[in-house]
Length: 308
Length: 329
Image (cartoon, rainbow over all chains, first blue to last red; front, side, top):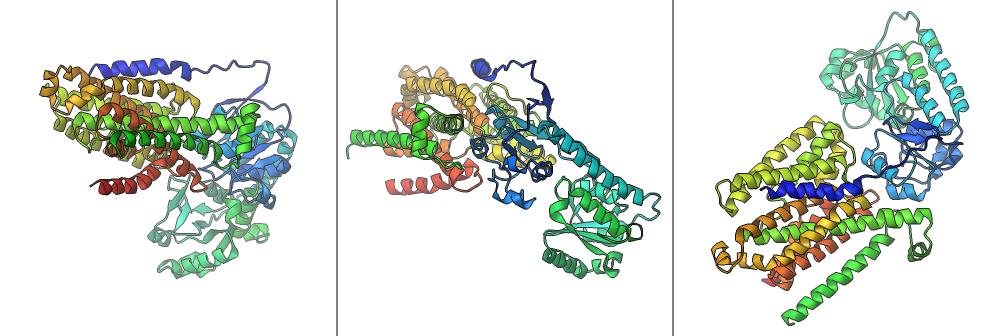
């Protein structure tokens, strides 16, 4: 079948004009490069119509005082409460290109967890898209805030916000200096099954920074389904349950205490099962520092005088 | 109703449905738009309406129509070629080959856009054609155009490619969402450059198959008889094979794997207007395009989130197909 390769070559040759779309770089405009390596002309002033494609980005935009300029958010963006009235562009993995286009944004901030084929499609509609990496540890938070500050031209506010957060993290670090005991911690994501955070999750980093040891730290994943036997073997000193509501937390605590075998672990016997705000802990935004402070106070009450 | 009148009715209904489908595609979507908006933006479009109507909705509708036409034409060709109503573009391995390519590109993180195709699209196109070429090369080595050999080799090669696809999916479970897009098909990423890439080829293949349609009629009598009647059987067969593979691989490259269209649309058309290949090819292309246009309308409007179009084609097409089969018999 010699005809097939020939036909193939013909298709590609015919398609060539469609594929080439040269855009002459404007040298005079300062550029900013996003985390995927795509250059974007740096906005001259703060964009007026910003679409956020992730809850943590929305939260940071509001923390930078840009809430009134956010014209589109995902349906998962529920913090701060003012996001309720902002048009929804869909979810994290199913944002709607047409809706985003109709909002006429002058800046779209996406993150690497969005389907990049859709992000690309937005870019080819000539929308200014800025893609950010998913944070891997607490140390990535302030750079992320400063990067969003840079692209929204609110550098000063971002620097102030970051400085405040850094000071609070340093206060926790200082409180934990030379800490002798690092309690073993098991994190439970409330819901179906024993989901916990592995070593690649930033929650793992939070536990470490809060003076604890994540029992699942050796698992090289973000979120993993843990085995009941391993919890019994690990015998953690404390359990954090990530729950949306107090009722969920209560249900999670009771379910855990009733699990055969698990009911005998130290954390359950000593009643050291604590609630963490799932909403705050699951978004890589400023509230992570609240979570950190709470974790540290719960794990080391002797140093921080109990939880705030 | 006489045959001719029935045929005329078929064409008229198809054309009206097709036009109505394009208008409906332009008017419906997650952003609420009315006829007034469309009318105004025909005169002096503002930026947003232009992007929504022209760049998003119209390009998508045109691409869906083209892919539907390509798949149905490819199916019509293969069913004639193999003299077998079970044949469709994906039996000879195009689909499994193409999904292997797409999933491989996703696993390797190859995302560059080239020739209007995305990275996975380009890989899908190349590996789809690659598998078919391999199947044909293997089956034709013994010098014959034996139908069973091609079909069985195609099925075997397809199974092998499916195994490899599953393996890569298993290894990279985080790319699952992207893989579903390729395995079940979608026009979510439609744009004009894709239309420009495949449009001319669909037109060329349609023209050539209409031109060779008479030879395809003769093939139905058997290769020896066709040869005796003056048809250059080997060359005709080769041309049809190349065209059907090309049409299917290009479709997969822009929209992922959309099953059922290539199998069922030619059947509908044959039941409605008869087996002569010239009308069959043209009518299959029109009906396939129209069918996929409506399926895409459903896929993007039925639920708040978009459905993969493969779900719709089967769910809508199968019951109607069964109804037609039983009504006619």
